[in-house]
Amino acid sequence: MSAPTTPQIDVRRAGDRLKTRIGWLDSKHSFSFGQHYDPANTHHGLLLVNNDDIVTPGMGFDTHPHRDMEIVTWVLRGSLVHQDSTGHSGVIYPGLAQRMSAGTGILHSEKNDSWRFSGATGSFAQQHDEPVHFVQMWVLPDESGITPGYEQLEIDDALLSGGLVPVASGMKEYAGHSAIRIANKYATMHVARLGAGDAPITLPDAPFLHLFVARGAVELEGTGPLAEGDSVRFTGAGGQRLSASGEAEVIVWEMHATIG
Image (cartoon, rainbow, N blue to C red):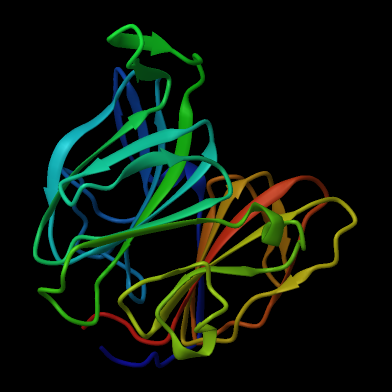
């Protein structure tokens, strides 16, 4: 891990992202992912994956393995069923923070929560027909080979403040203040829900920041308008103000180290 040098603000537009589209999945990748590989776009700071996924009802990712990765899932619309080999299962929905530590190895699945098994009938019943829209983000842990783990917490009330809310963190500065913990002492994920007339938020002042506009549109001081799906990679250039003229939601990764 190393520190930044020259300050930079790198705007990445939504339409320029790498894309995976199959019958049940519309996925847009901010960084190299799967069959999409660009050696110049593998990460920013400690963030390796920022996937913006929409999954159709009744479909999703079947059981698959992960190892040595901190995985944070943030749902924007709809609901997502999680199951893993450590025995954890549950439904993730907007306002619920969720983290999975893959560690020495874990198997898990994620599917649109449109069908649920009914013990009364012994069959699956359709609950709704809404796609699920979520962002999944990966950062490396401080150490490899940790024990796999899972954590979730509802923070919908905290998001009503309109400010930046620390959602997932391993930094000592946010100990006791973030909703869930990740095993990286240099990284914190924040979320803010903004509305028309809300006071602007101020981005953290950190060596590396990644701003992602998850919903709506915002205005970034010194840069201009950002649309849904746009992102900004800051290197030694935080502290700007961010505002919205309508409903919007942003995800901000504050990072005090980088890979390599």
